Image (cartoon, rainbow, N blue to C red):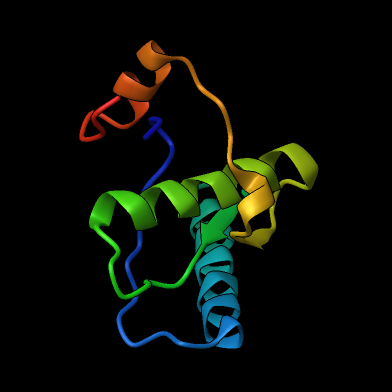
Length: 105
């Protein structure tokens, strides 16, 4: 996780619309906080999301959400992207250890 990245885990979220609404609310709050602090530039949030599957671990859901977020940053910053299998990314063993210290490579 980078210095400007964080994780939000939403329980009982089963619809994309619910996640989209939560992200939009978060965006508005960040932008309002920026205005209150006198931050001139427009603050944006690029989010990645996926839904927990039966056999998921924290690491597996985190990886998929991170893939979706990275895809969003590459394609259109300031958006919400939901994971799909085409979003898998290749990283070196060193990069994997830095980004995902809980993964066994």
